[in-house]
Length: 400
Image: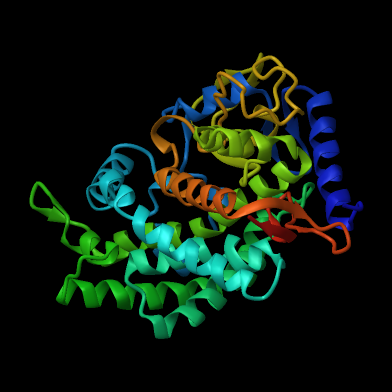
C-alpha cells in the first residue's frame, strides 16, 4: 500500500501530538485557549472525577436553539444528578439484554451485505459495502426508522458529520461559531425528524427503542420527547464511530498480516483484537471538560472555569502504561485503554459497537482465506483531528 495524502495527514497528526507532549503532559495552549492533557494517568483522573471536571462544556456547545434542543437529553453533556437521572432512564430501555438479543439479526445483516459485496467480485470497498451500511442498518432498525426514510436520514447524518471539522490551532470560540453556521441547519432538520418519530411512538408505542424510550418510567416520571431526542442524536452519530472501529480494525490487520492467522487459528482472540484496535486508533481523538474549581493535574495548577482537552490518542500510547505502544499487539495484557471513557461517562453504546465489530470479523474470517488491502487504489482516511477512521478501504478477498 503506497503512502497516500491521507496517510501523510495521519502521520502529521501523530507528529503534532508528539509535539504537544514535548511541551509537557499538561500545558496551556494560547491559540486554543485550553489546557492539553496528554498522559494516561492524567486523562484517567479527568475522566473519573466528574465533580472537578464537568461535562457541561459551555464554550464548546454554542448557545443556539437547535443545539439547546439537541443537548436537553444528551447525558454526555450533563453532570449528576441530571446525568444519573437521564442515563438511568435510558438504560432501562437500552439494556444489555436488548443489545445481546440483536446478535442473530446482526449476523443476518452482515451475511446479506457480504453476499452482495461478493456478487460483484473479489475486489470491493470495505467501508462502502460493509463498514458503513452495517452500523447504519442496525441503528435505523433499532430505532424503528421506516425503510422509506432511511436514505433521507443517511444523507442528513452523513452531511452532519462531514461539515464538522476541527483544526489543531483553532480557538474554541471559532469552532463554536463554525458549528452554528454549518451544523445548526442540519441539526434542526434532524431534530424535527426524530421528534416526529418520538411523538408517533408516544401515541402508539412499539417494541423498537424509540417506543421503549417513550414508555420507560421511573418513580412515575417518563422522559419527554426532547429528553429522548438527545439520546437518539447520540445513536445517530454513534454509527459513524462503529464504522471507524470496523475500518480501523481491518486496516490494522492489514498492517499486521500475521494477526489474521492468529485469529483464524483462535477466533476467541477477536475481542482482544478489537480492544487493541480501539487503543491503537481510538475513533474520537480527544474529549473536553470544564474545570469547576481550582485544581492540579500533572503538577500544573488549573484555574476554575478552564477547559481541558484530554487526548485519548496519546493516553492510549503512553509508554508508562503500554509497553511498546506503537506496536499492534492483540495479546497485550492488560489493555486498559481509555477509548470508550471511564467513570460515569463510559460509552453506553460500546457493547453494541463491540458486538457489531466482532460479528463482522468472525464472519469474514469464516468466509475468506485471504483479506488484504489493495495497493493499487488509495486508502482514504478521515480528518484525524475530528475522527480517526477510514472513508475508503479497497480490499481484495479470496474465498475458501
